[in-house]
Amino acid sequence: MPATPTVPAKPLPAPAAPTGHHALETAAGRGRLPGFVAVALAVPVGLTAGVLTSFGQTVLPGPLGGLANAVTPWLVVPFVLGALTRRWGWALVAGVLACLGEVAGYYLTSHLRGFGTSSSWVLFWLVCALPGGGVGAVAGWSWRRDGHDDGPSTRRGRGLGGAVLVAAWWAEAVVVYLALLGYVGHAVVFVSAGVLTFVVLGRYGRQHGGIARWLVPALVLAGAGFAVVYP
Image 1: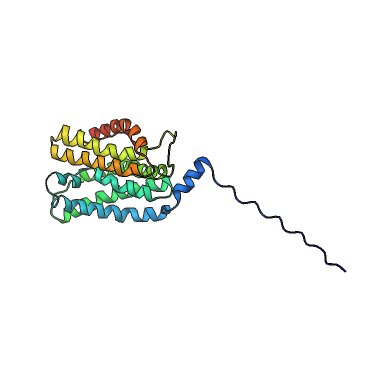
Image 2: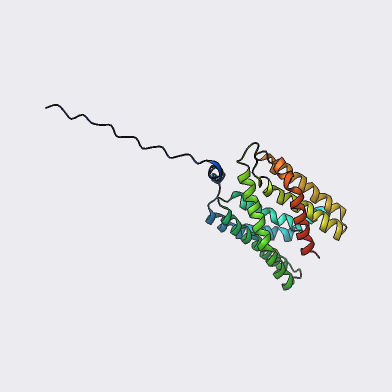
């Protein structure tokens, strides 16, 4: 009796490749930290930055001392954490925790070193850490995502994340160090840091044009923020 011929199994269809915005989000998520890892790292990283800030105030010479006595350098920490985090919601949480850790690490270290601390200032900066850490981290996440959109793009928000950090350097230079304190040397340091930030961030995914396009509104908002923090 002849054997019954077998019918080859029909191959399963290959999963559809992600397209459009979903494809961009998938690509941007590769190589990033899971949310719980970013959140676990946020507090120790923030505490370390706060400790280094306290010591930096007595070590960095001249105008460089502003780097250990200003807001924008602390925003770099949540920005980097956000850039390394897979999803923006987790990035926001990690950024806030990192900024809270910076405040706690700075004031605790300064107190242990014998410098006077004020509970009202501690509370003030803890409150400021909430929006500052969140905005900084989401800006970093956005910058990393935009870097995967390599080439010409019409997406409106492209470059905004990088513009936030550049604008923070320049706004603090003008509003705080020039207008309020009159420290020209410190302002030059912060303007230079902003230029370096623009060059470095813009190289990732060719974002120079997008960052430049968002600089004016970002500068206006950052300047207003510093004017509120330092009335």
